[in-house]
Length: 89
Image 1 (cartoon, rainbow, N blue to C red):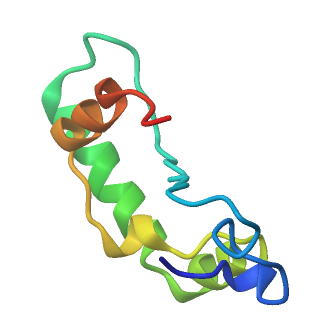
Image 2 (image 1 turned 180 degrees about the vertical axis):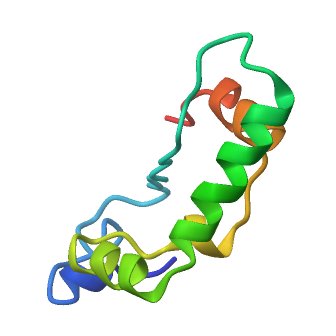
């Protein structure tokens, strides 16, 4: 588990006495149901291109986002799987 970059001085959940606690932030771009696959692929490629830009990653870091989306190239299929997985808590 990694301490949030913007909360380096704050305690983790474990340090606060709450074991086995995990929060995963998922951010994505959604399209209407029935959007053609080729359009979804183009949207995905454009989104990943933007997320890989240093200025975008730096801005995300200032608001507490670690740029995981840019590191974990996602596909429309894997996004659907994540969304359907439901909460773990």
